[in-house]
Image 1 (tube, rainbow, N blue to C red):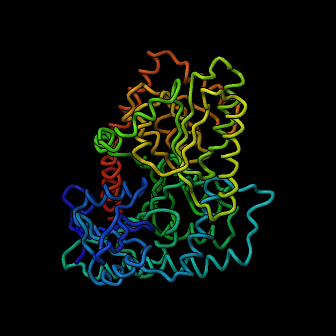
Image 2 (image 1 turned 90 degrees about the vertical axis):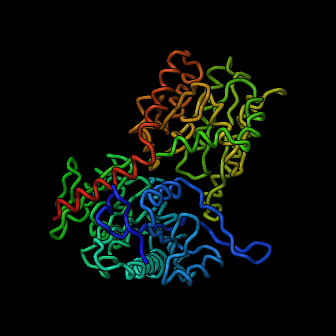
Image 3 (image 1 turned 135 degrees about the horizontal axis):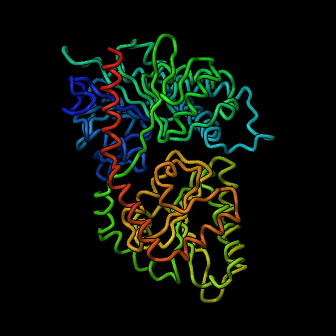
Length: 499
């Protein structure tokens, strides 16, 4: 059996709907009694795709098997999706070496670094045989494996249903549209949502020719290529036009390729405000509120992974510079940084984590007193504590080098109880939607960062309230449900235009 779209969405004609992502909604394991159990997936993408699955009753979600028990579920779900709670899941087991090449060489760091502009170009990347091997023996086989899984799932499509709708997600799976068309032809509607930034054409040219052209050609076999911002959608159209020489219109968001019209669209991802407000009122969060509220002075907050793209190091440096310029602020503010360690097996990330610790030590040694620690660093994944801090911050710092969106800015705004001010990088995806309510900062300029932090900390209460209320209103009016509905409406519009 296969899922069918609920009434009112892109599958209202009975079209089977399949969601495809590298990371799935659940991870299976065995409990102490040897019985199968599972844990829900975390992260913004999984949360968002859960909303898609809920909106389209019975949708099948295809994802990678990442545990031993996942592999057993994968074998069981080859013929029939595995049902867990309100989800129907088909897990895909990959060759371990191929998956490692795909994930740890081609997708991360290469695609991630290129799309976030993280390479020190005079030195890196140095592309060679390892890159080609990762592409040919890792990225391509894993993507083809996903396409084969989609084909298997759709084989159970009952007679009379509409053409399938296949929603593919993110940079690990750029070649899936190519393999889907090879297997299924032009009938299915295929979209690929890019959840990370899309660079300008010159940034894309860092990739080896076989990757940059192969990826673009695959994406242009989808019907819609989706992004979180208009800027990224325009960059994609420009990249396709300049790298492949195809016809593209940035303003209309259209690329014409091999007789087909491909739409480039922006759908800014969001959250479920009600769900976050309920979480903020939970006992688990309330238990964490005391230690957060006991910190001296006003609360400057950041919640991030230790990813290079998050720009944590410059955030601490800008804060230190603010204390140098405004010594009267010493003891009047505490910077709480909740950081989740990320990708420590990649040398650049391990070095960055060390630099973060060093920067914190330097600021604390230079400006701290026996009764006041300028930066309180927590290197753990403690989400209840993060939400408790969301409620209490006076200033939230989001100074990413680049971000597809940045949901922290939205999550925190909804539950904050102090008219907190958002300091937001102009290069974060969220800035396109939230910038007018924030204090905008150039993420590379330490002086501007210091000034922005000080301005936010000393902002008059009336202005803080105006901005905070507008920010909350924006997030509450553009929820995850609106994000899903906008995509489903465009599926209907595209199919109607295509005839």
